[in-house]
Length: 108
Image 1 (cartoon, rainbow, N blue to C red):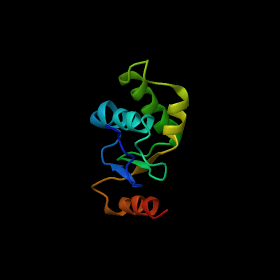
Image 2: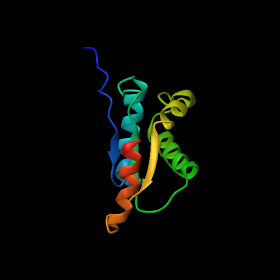
Image 3: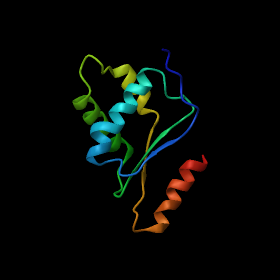
Image 4: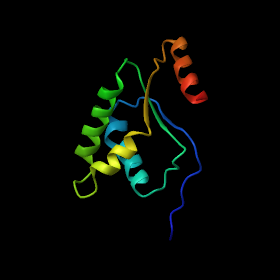
């Protein structure tokens, strides 16, 4: 059975720097990307409560994906392409003003 590519969409992950996201969700999305199931026009927008520079965020996701994905399935070329889809936005559920940053990213 052939697997179809998803329609173009942004995937927003609340709690994106937490254990569930880093262990399961982001590695699963890496596999979907590798299997060409994620639409190239879509993005993966990861939300976290604390400010984090992009290079630190990408390193965090890289290290966790590499740690939870078997070496035979992880390759640097696919990672480089996948990482371009990743975006980090600081959103704190206790600070309603912080949702403006998410709205801005979604509108672009």
